[in-house]
Image (cartoon, rainbow, N blue to C red):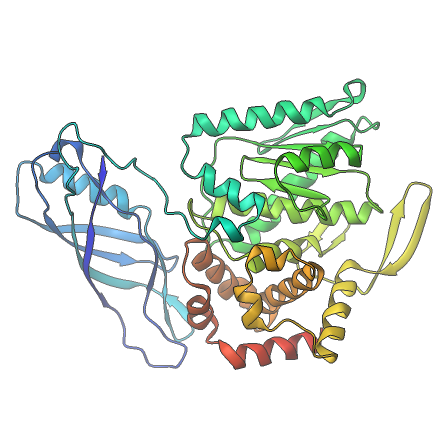
Length: 443
């Protein structure tokens, strides 16, 4: 099928905007309808007039095809193509008196035939994503993601299978164990027999936490393959595997867009391992279920949100997103000690940088490319990204329930971040910088 269309016009009919917080519905996901194969070579490019309602969750309901012009015997095929595409469209719902409100839309879509739209001619594969960014500034993980975006699912599985074979070759075979859940396969060579099962349970719990943080605004995309997770008892084995996928040297764990994760158990304390697993599992959830294929969300947001979950307190076996006690008890084999928590260490680093005038500005943080973010000041970039996400989630009443999920949806669909911040929070430039710094000062 040929992907070719033009959105001609869209008009919203809703209650008038009365208060400063009111706004109209904003289109954030637009999937092109496919010119039906039945129309190939005909040169037909009809205008399709439509009416629909954007509900309070941003979905199109009550879709009506009002007119197809010029009309032909192929109208049913064009109507089917339009309806299939519209099922994937998403809006940030209109806001009326501070609450989401329905909006009635009337607009016109025109299919546009291409020169290749002929029988036997070349076709753009359905679902081919648009690549965002440049290879020169991308991390290894992002380059993999960009490369994989142009491959078919069977080709991706073949690549993953080769990486899994590499990982298997680095495991201690005598202690290899495996555990499987609905979304994960965990493989480890840890000496304790219960490690694989416990880690698999923790990964599932993290998925549940992230889902709650983003729902119902973000509807997770379905996926068919489980995330395969290798947990190496030896740091040397982990490092060998990580180098194979161009992972940053300082990372003790990673998620790959191939659909696999890896960690090492050889870390300073159990609490560090827990934070690491939470962090990388957030990356897996975003890539597998939230970010539209072909889109790369900003590095600061990807890492900051992962740290928002990863730095959270765990109380009675449950993650408490965004919570941050100042001190914690760290545990390692045969020893335990009290020290500042991971979140306290990060917050203190940022506060010290602000006091010395060496903090990264929000403007620079938002625009930081991976080579800068993961460079010499990566610890400060991570900490400031985490605190900016914390501010966007918890800086105002109910921001975590409505604004931050909507902002994440904007970013996951490729909406420009500056425009998304302005639309969702009404903040940008100096006011955003001032509000962020005031929040950090009280953290």
